[in-house]
Amino acid sequence: MSTPQTPPAISVRGGAGSIDARYDDIERLGRLYSEVGGRLASAAWDDKLEAADGDLLASAPLAPRTFAEAEGAILEATYGPKGLAARALVIEAESFCFVAVVEIYRTADELRRAVLESVSYGLGFVVGVALPSVALTGGVAYLGLHVLAPEQADELKAWLGVEGMDLLEEDPEVVELLVNGGGGLLDGLGANPLSAPLLDVLGLDGFHPTTGAAADDLGDLLFGDYHGELNPDYDGPQFDLQPPRDTQDLMHDLATVNDGQDGVITVQKIAGADGTVRWIVDLPGTDRFMDEHTIRNMGSNMNLIAGDDTAYGEAIRTAMEQAGVRPGDPVMLVGHSQGGMQAAALAADPDFPYHVTNVVTAGSPIATSGIPDHVHVLSLENSADVVPHTDGEANPATADHVTVTANSPHGSVTANHDLGVYEGIAEAVDHSTDPSVQAALGSMDGFFDGGEGSSTITYQTQQGDQIRPAGINDPLEMALNIIF
Image (cartoon, rainbow, N blue to C red; front, side, top):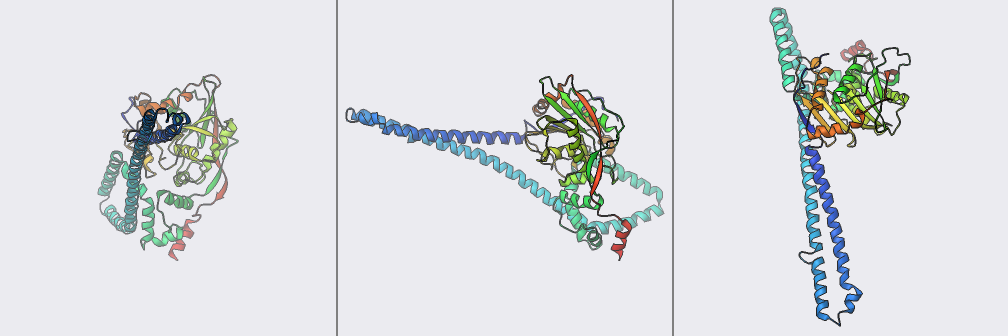
């Protein structure tokens, strides 16, 4: 793993300086105006009652002209054209305008997103319908090219690989578009006579309006579900992490844990200078994509995109309990790739018993995780890394979710996703003067002042008892069912 020598240039989305934060400010101003208008209306009514004051009425026979002037002044100040009631109406109207404008903009954003999702689904459906025929024709053509001219075939494959990688590095949003149409692609395959029988046998012939729905069915088909537990016989390295000083240290520590054995995580106790005990949980990503018995596999990725529980999440909860994390202690979850997805899922889980205040992710697709607004989120992304786009959405640009992106292409999917790249992005974050970044770093201050009493415990998570087997247990039986 190599760390960039100089921090890359970064762009910032979301956070305290974001449009969404401005929406919140305008909405708060609208509510404040509404409160002021209500108080003015109440004051107008109270002041109007002064016109019926007993002493004032008693003075009428003695000074009728003065009494009339006083009555007129009271009514003018309360219900006249420039009185309190009129001013209250104006302020209430302004309050309505503030809130209405915010709602219009937010509705427009939601409509635009809905249109994009519909377009993505439609494109996916069209591709799915055409794909079997195109694949069949292309397979025959490829076979002919390979037989007749193997050297040219190798050149073509190499060219396609380079061009494809360049396309993804220059415009990874293409992956976002394709993934967001994943449900449509699956439904399109189900509509093609060539592939429909296969999907019917596999149980994938339903409606998949979202990427999460497609991931849910595919995950059930390819992977079983398991309980998560800790390995009581783990005898690997026990990591002794020093309290971090900044975001770069967070990424360095995560990379250190990532280099450990499959399933390993760490729970770090931070004894703060203010006497508060805080905790940092380091969560590496996928170990083995297609290994059914690895706790961090592709099945976990699919479960997380679908919004389902995972064995990894259950084991993390057990580790935190064993480490002595108390329900009220501030917790920061730091994760790379699947680890970041799992961190976001735990922070969004209302049944998670711990007080997650911060989530830091590196190269993780967490746009659809639903993290609540009270959790501060810092997402690091490499624009050349396709992985953060594999949930089909851009991260929400809310006041408490900051996404920092750098353009750091390294020539391959694996290299672009490497934690060394994200350590360089973290260094750029630590040197940034952007107000959104500064606010995000400020929310983590307490985790960066650990002293004596800080410690780290290493755990190895693993699969426990099986809950549900994979949908495909015997590929040969499946093939025979399709044929006969």
